[in-house]
Length: 199
Image (cartoon, rainbow, N blue to C red):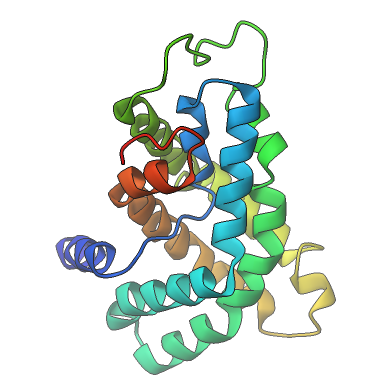
């Protein structure tokens, strides 16, 4: 049920150090300059692509998604098999700092988010939340699915089950990861922003 899923999400978010797919890069919005945005985005991308973070992401997805699956063992095996490869394929594209900062409007002249004051913790966490909304959106999930099904991963994988795995995992994984991002936004802003807001 949806309530059970939400409950599991909250439990998992509180239990693991978070990850955030395409989400994280948003805290950028709260930093002062385009350079700050790119620095934060680069730090977040590096963190999310690290072996330790990908392993955590895998555990969170297994723990949140598989208890509700028709075949929990198959779910567990599929996530463990595919998630590290999917993450390695999509993060360099969808979390590339320059393009994310441009998409958020952080690197434009007359940027309404380029505050002249030091950003606050609330500014930063609101930015993370905005990006989490984007990555959990049907539109962004559709882009990621199409990318991974094609040249982004499956076209060169030589795996008959690849497309099916993308379609089965990504639409459920991204909202979970977006939720974790929001839950842990204060910690991300502390650890990865250039000014250490929220510490």
